[in-house]
Length: 227
Image (cartoon, rainbow, N blue to C red; front, side, top):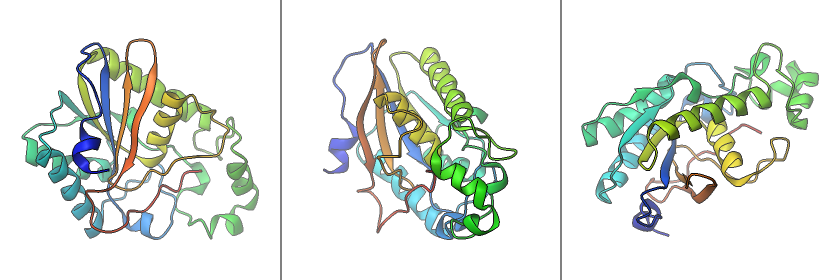
């Protein structure tokens, strides 16, 4: 499915609030399979190129949106910057859109974590929604933060088209919210770097419209490490 089809998956129902969700471009920690969470890591060279390709794809399909939001972590802000440049808009930073705080697991690779923090890693794998990972957020706390933020944005811009630049874990929470997937269920979707993802809200029901479009990128994009 080409970008034109993905970019315009909606009808003309003006009561529906539409969201285009963008995951940030690649970072060195993504490439190293290192858990980022709140750690403020910048995009790498590939990530900057991905952000530019994503913004260019939106521009080339004449995508129109009413407002641009971004997480306040620099990897998201740098990705949003590519959109700001091409569309001559300013992004609104929203701290509640940032990634899950992964506590003591932050900074560890997926190979290091089972060795350095074996018990915590097993708890993480179990998707215990109330475990805060020693200093971090539980899945429940994280999901609630994202849900509140999404509803606040929707209420402020009801019936509009909203572009959000955020993180793999955050977008997974939005997917679960829109698809009614349980928080303790294993992740069923990919959230690649610089992917375009679509959900909508008609005033009573959330819906996933399209997910994980990377047709605008040169080469493969890394999936999110959040479990």
